[in-house]
Length: 103
Image 1 (cartoon, one colour):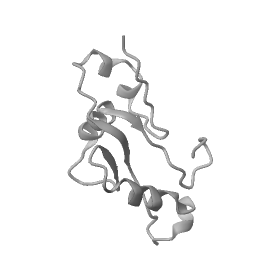
Image 2 (cartoon, helix red, strand yellow):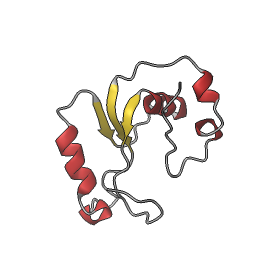
Image 3 (cartoon, helix red, strand yellow):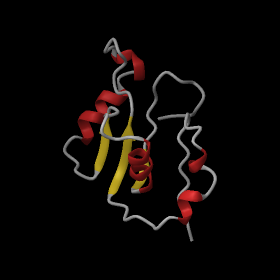
């Protein structure tokens, strides 16, 4: 059975919720933990995430099976979906948004 349910907070992409991804061949989960997004805001102020995201980035740098980076141009929507599917855990560290409960 398919047990993973990952719906990122601001992802209106219907493929995350309509079941199409479940019908595709299963991928090996070789990414232990995944986050790709803003680590520092544009001004570089640590208050953005109360310093949590930069600390997590530093803590995970030495772990080869963890992706914790800013968005990169070489990873488009299909790449992003694939990384989510290959991840055991998808991290959602606090940022500005009050609309989700976060660490």
